[in-house]
Length: 246
Image 1 (cartoon, one colour):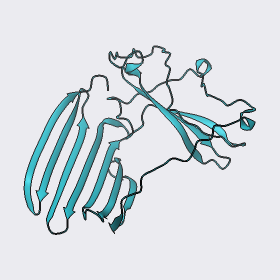
Image 2 (image 1 turned 60 degrees about the vertical axis):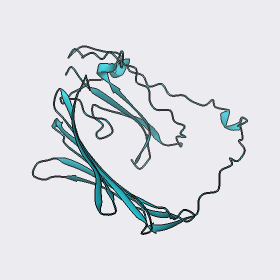
Image 3 (image 1 turned 180 degrees about the horizontal axis):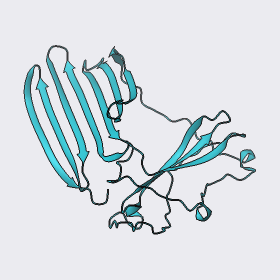
């Protein structure tokens, strides 16, 4: 019912107790249904035939489980939402799901056996700070805004031979109101540190924010670098990009 829309497909393994396991997925910007380089708007109310490829995967569905194809017009924050809230109707009688299947006797057939791979010996390291990760989803009771926050402290490690120490911390925040696709906001913050004892210490911090309106994406970014406690580099960017049917 809109000139732009996204279609997200998820092929899921539904267990007897109702639990669901994602097998694979596929995304299609319907404005790019004929070409990625020459997108074109939809005509609301018109029927379209669209072929959507799912990502390659190998998966065994146990006996007693069911397959479910879930279809939606959003997949935030995996994909940026279309500018307007859309409704897509599926003509189920004319729709087909094609799945590659092994032949019935393939389980008893000959399988190729690969020799063990050879890998180099890992560098000797000492863990100075443990890895810590967290993911939280909240809904603001007053505004109704949904928030996903991802925190990843990748720890601090020292390479024993060179005595080089390295650490990093990443924070991601995604917010959106389910009734307003234009409220989508993505924020990323990275902190990296490199040092060798007291001889030298460096670190860099970046912060990136992406927002949008109906016609444009807006990017704000900051980067600051320190040597010891002195700022040696600092820059801020602000850019605007046309949505071009995204």
